[in-house]
Length: 342
Ligand code: KG4
Ligand code: ZN
Image (tube, rainbow, N blue to C red; front, side):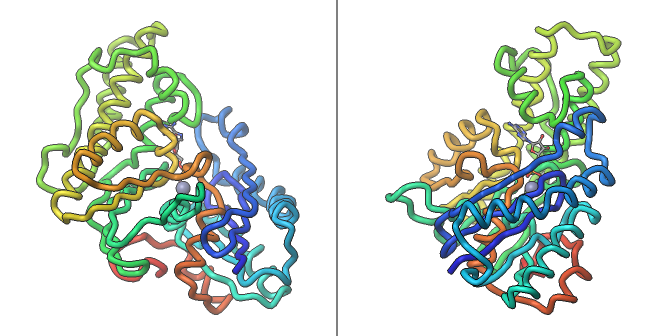
């Protein structure tokens, strides 16, 4: 069963074909990241225009690389939200049109489910997919959540950020340090040569008896430090600050995840979202949860940040086509308690 996935929620234009929710036949991602580097953040209008330019060539390439035509497909899956409305619109309209022309069902997918389901893609012949019940740690530029999945569509939100998402904090701190955009990769790089204990930064809510996160205070702490130094840091100081900041974020994410695993007794952890590209986070998280006898899944290489492979995979497991015209009306929603596809 082959599904074409389309993802355009932010600055990536992505299309992928997945067979039986396991085999990735093609994966094409075009990013307008370089354009946003200049402004140090995403300009929604620019992102939407780039989506328009790339959507057809990207879908075309994904279909060709998979060696399929519309006739070979079982369904078309598209990210319906959450995301930037102008960007989402481009993918949703493309998905609706293809679904209409090819006479194949259209399956709307929550963006965050894409970050979960890339972990169901077979990476080698010994691969076995995540087993339920599982906890999903979603860490991206827009979200930081811990969700308890008892089954594919039986889920409860256990905790989430009360302000900034973790990826957003990386992006804002990188801007303060003049390191560029997106912040995650540049902070990770700068942190390699840094001393994580050089600056004493807060771990907001880490000791609070809940599973929520808060990253805006951490960002403000870095802002005060940079103001104190008049935004004038040496490369060594930047590295130290990057390492101290990265460690504070990672320790908070790991601490809350361990708490959630202890509270629920769940033995499978699935992690996803752009921040999981961070190797320091992967190493710390793996070490902490494996000590508890928990099996952990990370996104396959290159599939932490936004892609359509997870969207096509999610659609396979949560196959629920909908009336074309109801899809866009509900484009903005959160992955929260209840049925995750609503
Ligand atoms: O999942 P994603 O591609 O888009 C959203 O759904 O938001 O995540 C993008 C976020 C950005 O904030 C980016 O800075 C962060 O993921 N990110 C990283 C790394 N690579 C990307 N954060 C930390 N370390 C990285 N290596
Ligand atoms: Zn994402």
